[in-house]
Image 1: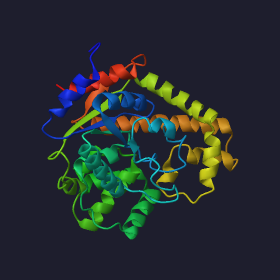
Image 2: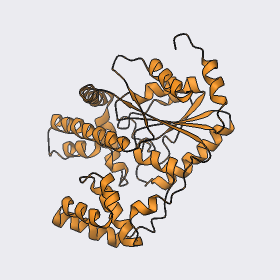
Image 3: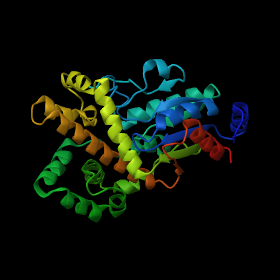
Image 4: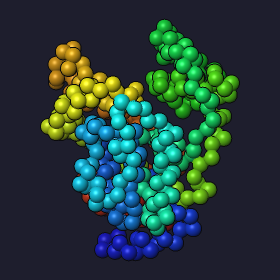
Length: 322
């Protein structure tokens, strides 16, 4: 690969019979951003964020957004789309993402999705399914069961009515367990059955998915270092500003908000809140990897801390051109 020119990469990409769409996934702090910049140049790509928190304005440090000046060098989309006091769901994300795919392909360039939100990646590639209208009464009933009898009870309930879905959901992922049960109770059909009725993009595009991974100990150290860096950048002030708003349920889930809210309410010292951010981010990275490992379409890219972003990007582009 040494000394290969960008033109030779791009020439081989043009020969694809279907327009190419690339996904670069991975756990938080693995280095997706820097690799994506190098890959975008090699692929003649424009970047679409696949991050459920970067869609919100004001969550800049918390979601590790690139500064606007750097985003201008390579076009970035689906960042700063909505105020954090507004809800933003997967159906809106997919609708806007598909529109961006078409626009980018029409310009003769490659859409490059970058981020760690597995659900967003899934709905773009595989489509949505008809899950019926949300039913607040059913959701309230399930939430009460959760509070009264615990997540283990709910998970066993899901295993009885939809064992296939239960096999793909972690018992402690109560949000997804409740969602699967809500779909079953409102439609009478297991969510795993409905998901198979989705219509995805594979018929029209050459979809390639890559996931970066590194030694777990190194990744966790990088996560801890990132949290420390966030505090130097002023994350506490950012969270104070956000807490002055009536945050949407989704935006409120951003790691760092609840932890620092406790500090702001004098419920814990700052160091304890910081350690909680590190701990919860490590747990999130673990959940991300669990999600991605279940997708057999993913090509894993094992990297080390010493690998240069351009080296990693060239490895990915080489796989695309095989």
